[in-house]
Image 1: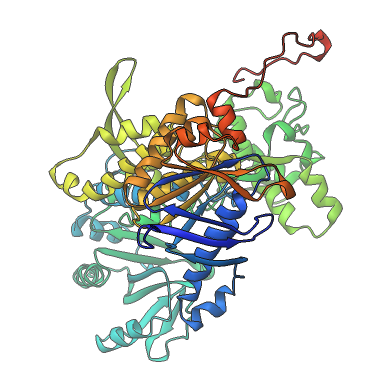
Image 2: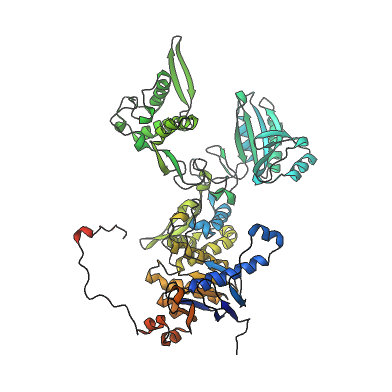
Amino acid sequence: MAASVRDSIVVSGARVHNLRDVSLTLPKGKLICFTGVSGSGKSSLAFDTLYAEGQRRYIESLSSYARQFMGELPKPDVDQISGLAPSISIQQKTSGWNPRSTVGTITQIHDYLRVLYARAGTAHCPRCGRPISAQSREHMLGQLLALPEGTRFILLAPRVRQQKGQHKDLFEDLLRRGFARARVDGEIVDLSQAPELDRYRRHDIEVVIDRLVMREGIRPRLAEAIELALEVGGGSAIAVIQGGKGRSRDILLSAGYACTRCDLSFEPPQPQMFSFNSPQGMCPDCDGLGRRFDFDPELLVPDDSKSFLSPCVAALRTRPGRWRRHVYEGVARYLGIDLNTPWRDLPAEARRALLYGTGDAHLTFEWRGRHGLWKHGGRFDGVIAELHAAYRKTTSTMVRRFYERFMRETVCPACGGARLRAQALAVRLRSRVREGGRRRRVALNIADVCGLPIARALDFFEHVELDATGRLIAEEPLKEIRARLRFLTDVGLDYLTLDRAAPTLSGGESQRIRLASQIGCGLVGVLYVLDEPSIGLHPRDNRRLLASLERLRDMGNTVVVVEHDRDTMASADEIVDFGPGPGVRGGEIVAQGSFADIARSPESRTGAYLAGRESIEVPATRRPVKRSRRRPRSAGG
């Protein structure tokens, strides 16, 4: 009696590629293996017939408006397919060439990590490393009262941070509440004439609370303005200190996140702050890539026996003139060095300061002219910053090529390859990890965790230390993170790291990552089609891969695997053997049934090898290895 459509997938008259009017019935909710010689039609039935028809039916179920953006898929050359479920293909292919994609983003583990660190992590000051404590109203008031008398500043309340949209409702609501102005994307605007914002761009909107001038007796008005700004801004305020020549600087005031020792305030941690694909989280120096095409100190200084003034930096070409020399001499006085000393004899800190600058330190420079000594102060950004400015400014191809001789792709010096801003890297989670047979406490940021092998990352999250409130908040993110890390371990990928870039993955690794992601999705009633998932997998991990496929089946899905592996055939509930040969000599079903049925079939070439009737003999004699042909093996090989 024919199997019920409810329990089976029935294919009638499949003629895709070299298939010869193939008709068969496949049981649902089983692990099915398509096998046979290469080119016999396995993939034609699995991918170009079953999967292609499943995708076509899904697209046809959408509205005509949605279909116009997706296009039409051709119908496979088949008379009829009944009982077909929604289908998902997991093929042998690379993960793409997007340098922003990592193992963590592909498996969506990074999304849960961002939520976990934003809600349960402990924030620290990026400068001094101390835990960030709440900043009181009095401390904020004292910080602004310390400004010099006569300083003009504007107090703002942030309402929108890097969000897309036109925000018309927000402008109308602020007008109703009595606010007259706001700073939109860095420009002060009148709310009665609010600008038309591009809905597809990200915007920053801060409400102007008060315009103030520092003078005696301002304390009551300033305290009231700070209180209102914190109320409107949800615990955060911004003081815009106005300087000369239209320059200004922002001081962030936060009721929840501030370092009282360094007088620094921070934005409250949000999940976007831990994303290297978001403007709020990415390192501004490398745009969240972790690497940049930059000047390399080794190429800049080919001869370290020369002094800095010689110059030893080859890209400077000539000795510095009087103006640049007096700047370098000011830096030398600050560092306590002699610029005529050979480069190799200078301290490492001094060499780094000359190349990359002295940070926020205020230096004093002395210029001796015809009218005597003139002293002035400022910052020193370093020789590499000067070269960057010259490289960006020039329009000459020859000059650009000259500078590019001293550049190469290097790890970003600002984030050290972590891709994130300093504030995100200063948020840590504590755990007890196993090292040398014992467990010790560690506090790691999100980049440190993503740099651990998946097996060690799983150990970190299984023993993470949180207080009662933190455990309640982190329960769901931790559950998802642990489950997805276990899935990656089950498919034999415990040696990868979550920050591994997608373009560096092999086809087999990419396929198993997608397989682990599908197991984590928890879908039921789906047809999964896989293309030789055991390729590139060590035999010791093959059993774990098969256990993952069986788990996918036990969840209520139908799993079709195109495979030549004996262990996969032994684990399959149903085997379909294609043949009898490749190409035009194939396209037929030679045998179908269990492992034992295929092994007993006299027509099946695969069955002959499974039963031992045929075998590939090991050569009795082997070609002698010539010493000249031997290649040294790498340490990892």
